[in-house]
Image (cartoon, rainbow, N blue to C red):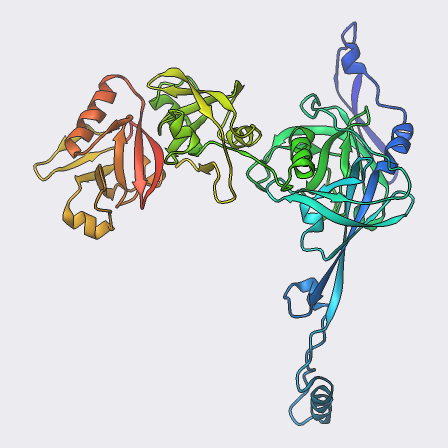
Amino acid sequence: MSLLSLRLGRSAVVVLVVGLIALPAKIDPAVARPAPTSFADLAAKLLPSVVNVSTTQKVTGDQGDAEQSEHSSPDLPQFPPGSPFDQFFKHFFEHQHGGQPQAETRESMSLGSGFIIDPAGYVVTNNHVIKDADEITVILHDNTNLKATVVGRDTKTDIAVLKIKANEPLTAVTWGDSEAARVGDWVLAIGNPFGLGGTVTAGILSARQRDINSGPYDDFLQTDASINRGNSGGPMFNMDGQVIGINTAIYSPSGGSIGIGFAIPSSLAKDVVNELINEPDHTVHRGWLGVRIQEVTQEIAESLGLAKPRGALVASVNDKGPAQLGGVQPGDIILTFDGKPVPDMRQLPRLVAETKVDRVVPVTVWRKRQEVTLQVKVGRLQETEKASARPPAKENPKQSESGVVNALGLTLSNITVELKNKFSLTDGAKGVVVVEVAKGSAAAEKGLKPGDVIMEIAQQEVQTTAQVAARVDHEKKAGRKSILLLVQRQGDLRFVALRLDQG
């Protein structure tokens, strides 16, 4: 079979044969499966369950955003000094508004999408669709308008549940398993783009586990089905007509669809919706571990004897929090949580949040070059608490008589009264203090700076520069390529791995 490239000119067609591709004698049926001939039957079945969500908000002209200012009362027109129009308009505004143009109150409207998840009248949408709304109207597929009330909302996942009352039976959809959906599977999106209502688009599942920095539990499905403004809150269906995602965001320089849309997976949304409906306080009860975590880099993995970067490095634990009570320690790398692997730092907060409060779960950590399994009782996450994630942050050391050591591109000193005052260190500060950082060194690249206090070297406490020198020398002799430091900066802890073969 030839691969052809066609270029149409004014009077000619140029055909380039760039190669021949040999076909296998037998094509795998899974690969050769044809596209659906039509989505019409499926769309007709699903359309009655998808709704338009219209919100109204009272705003005034002085609230500041550009859209509102277009509708606010105009400012006093500007005319050349001495112009008769200047005095005319000045007297007009003084008479009408007491001397100042007044900002009038008006109603701002916005449109989104949603879907009926229960015949009793529960509707799922995005929280940002109904945020700050004074009045919410749900428009059914047959154009019936119904007033809606907010049952509950979850800002962390951008999910909200509404309640409507209808005289006729409502058509509801069911949840599907987003975990079973594979990249390349066909999906159907139905929503209200640009207020047009009842619009069906089709595409494939383009990718999974996308993090778009919209919240702490980002785990989006990506699709190339056309999703535009107004589609927010609408459902993404699999070919069985089940909801596997809530269309939430798009990537677009122009504001229109370019084939990169994102949906909250049903594996996350289903439990959130159930809690918003069924919990007495209509809030989501999330699990809480009580740790601060950071990325496991290649250098950190090497320094701790881990074969490859994986898991979440515990920078610190909350006092008397679930992790501390369960035996988790700073410096541990959490490899699995409740039997589920933690491939990287981003996955742990979601795994913990989805765990039932007060449940005891096994947590496997990497500690002192071996796996240790702990039993941790999961607490409840409060609004002020979160499992926070921190970004990752050559010479033989020789100690001088003044207690200063040069190692790892750092000039270190024992903590003295003068240094406490200079760097505003606490009275209880323990470790050695960074006095100077060599320009261009690995330490400088990792963000270390004067005033940082190094509390541990290779997971061993250090109180003096002599101990630092000894630990660095020991790690070098052991053939380590990197060494792990526990650094305190103004009460904030983080781990930093530095290569031993760089000065």
